[in-house]
Image: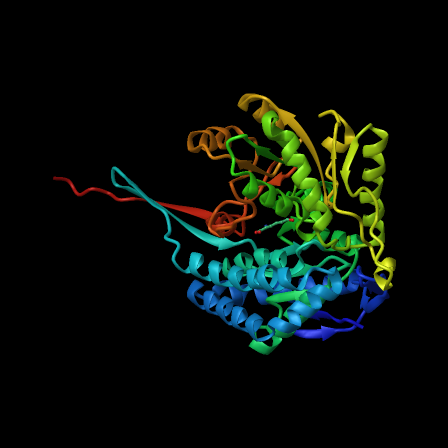
Length: 469
Ligand code: 6OD
């Protein structure tokens, strides 16, 4: 049974629950569910370690981040295997995106923190400057779609800012976190600085509500984000949330069509559409609409299906395929489930799917589906395209495909989204602010924005008396 990692030690506790291989539905491991005692033990361990960790110079904490990055490099293949076992991700993606981003996250935040200047203000004999102190114990709640990438995206800045952490991975994807626990132990990270507990949403709730948890960072569904907010409201804990999306892509007639089609194939179908940044609404300028649809539908049929994370999520995605039909959509590709003729037929697969013909106000076009599916509609003018893209309760990401430089900037600046990509998608510079508007989240992480969230400033003001002239 997979053990929790508390105070630097493996802790076997809690009722066992199974983790399934999404490729086949088979049970691949048993994991102990964190109960109130386990959660309390993890938070206490984090709290006990907090003072000494916070007292280390930032350069030393940055050194620890670099050592953890080296540990990830050494255990690269084990991390790849664990991530694939839990998620069914393609090997190539796991080797080039998920695990390398873990290394990059630790290295980037080591550099950003080590080189960050303090702020000082001087005005008429008054000097004010700020010192930043860590929040204390941070609860890191990690989703199942990019388990290692997102765990490390939050851990690295939280640690370098001087916090200790209790991580709860998704109940579906504990494997790479368990390898990471071994990496922390092997590196000799002081006990209690990183604690990892496993369990379902109820364990997450116990964690965020614990009185000694000082802040919560979460990436996942808007519904869970809202539940966390309610759970921590009485103690007004700081939260950083990156939540759902119903992301639009705008394809203008002046685009490079080959590049736009391939870019949209990536943005719709990567990770089985299970990335909060994936495109679910595509708007294409009328003169190229028919050709674009034909080419996108043809490419969708060539995409190798990736499993949904669970039987339940597969049912959810399939319910939207049924909804599209009942709302009157025309299905251009997919719309059902693939058949392999082997044990994958018991896995959680759905067809990569493209539909058209629905109203902007259909449920299909308004609700986040989180599967390998998009709706394609046409537009005539630039301002119509912008209005269509902005017609959403979400505001996470958008993509623009155009050959026009002026248009690219003009449209990008009017899109109501935290992230806009032009002629590309999911291209990351880890120093930039990352997050969304409205139902897509609260706050920004990335670069110094992460360090700001994981610390609090104290302003110190000194008045200098002037000697009489
Ligand atoms: O790439 C990242 O840093 C990031 N936070 C990705 C989030 C993806 C959500 O599904």
